[in-house]
Image (tube, rainbow, N blue to C red; front, side, top):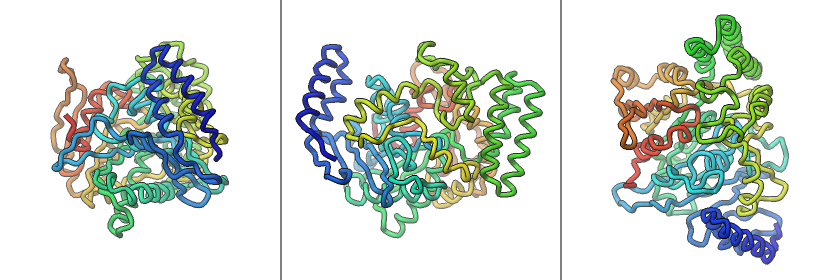
Length: 478
């Protein structure tokens, strides 16, 4: 790619000056880091392997995980890093759901990164506890792209193979990264990526082909056992007075169809019926928000104004069976201008790559694997001694706590009975002493019940989420 450095500098400097006049200093700092990197090489005919800020606080780039398949990553080095020889500073690899949701956009600017969608500092950024590594996974998602459609992946295992290749190319040549334990933290469908990646990474570590230490895996509101979640939807909503007996009856019939289709190996058909079930739930409940059962679809989060998102837009998105809305309504609707504007310019993304919160083709390609459970993979990780944490927002429907508890009870792990028999302990955050969560741990299995939170726990309960991440990563942060 050819870059006119002089023109880029003039544009960035003028925008920086305007940002300072408007007193948006965090935005100005965001831009100035780009200026420090503008002279780094971008090789003609191919993408640069990595670009970094002058102070080394950020690195980003593309990895060609297969010929013609390019995965984008963005690594933030924490300014809160504590040097403790007994507790090495951790790295969190964030995996977004979907399949096809952009971690570089949604997870970063929408949930846990250093800046929010307005490029203002986030008070509860997870950088306070760890370095952050965001990827757009699988290829075809966000800034990641393929040169031919046939290079898109169709299964969790294929996605894990690409992610493992990414880790090999990033960690094997960087001794600084190798010193930090890697924690894979996933959200929604990302949980299925996380456990398949975890097993793939362990195999490559054992073979000496991957040089990193796997610290643990955290599954946040994760789509680990689709059938357990869909079974929970209608009864849960009936108890909350959001559907009546008619809605319950129709939903139950569709759930039975899904069970039969999965049993017969008709996975694409099961995915199609899942979409029909969601529409029945929407219509029967008068458009409940699948990501927070205390709201209607289109209702903005508490932190947003009511005119930031129209109900019509959200309902139209749901009418496409949620294929294009694997993310919280209102959370990322306004990320497109940012991600295709100043962020794209800073990162020097190819001009023909346009960011979207959801890769529709990616979701379509995963339709045969979407309803596949990954409980066995969790068992394998637990048996291998990997620290596994499950956390769930109390108000989520799509990946309900009731469904999460159901699939956990199906684990064959030898410590399960003791875990299930244990009492939970409350967790607090801040000075008000209000119960924010409950937690339970036995050996290497941990579960957090996060109160007053929906599908996107870091958004709804940022304080307790940050504390939880500190516990998960054993962060030496003070």
